[in-house]
Amino acid sequence: MTITKNTENSKLTIAVSGRVDTTTAPELEKEIFDNANGITELVLDLKEMSYTSSSGLRVFLKAQKLMNQQGSMKVINVSEDVMEIFEMTGFSDILTIE
Image 1 (cartoon, rainbow, N blue to C red):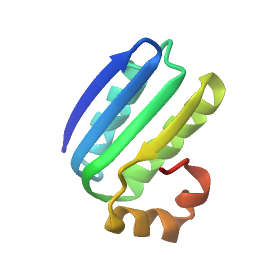
Image 2 (image 1 turned 90 degrees about the vertical axis):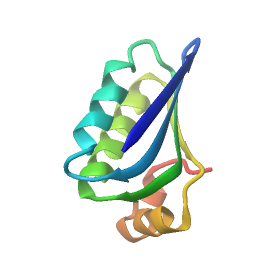
Image 3 (image 1 turned 60 degrees about the vertical axis):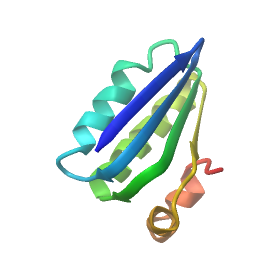
Image 4 (image 1 turned 180 degrees about the vertical axis):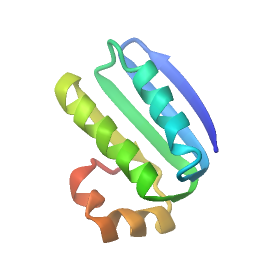
């Protein structure tokens, strides 16, 4: 997994590539939460993310809960395979996906 982040004022964009699973999810969680202070808009760009396990889903849920308190979060560029995971788990109803 590779993470690229960009901050503009109070907007944080995090691009994720590769697989988010048990071994990589903690790194993604750390990146989100270490950089969320003062952020009112979080954008997760999943264009290059090929897979997420339940560990990754937990990170997305925690990020959504955090951003519900301090602003908004949206997920963009979701592949068909990852979208299928979001739909099967009900995350497509929880997350704002564009």
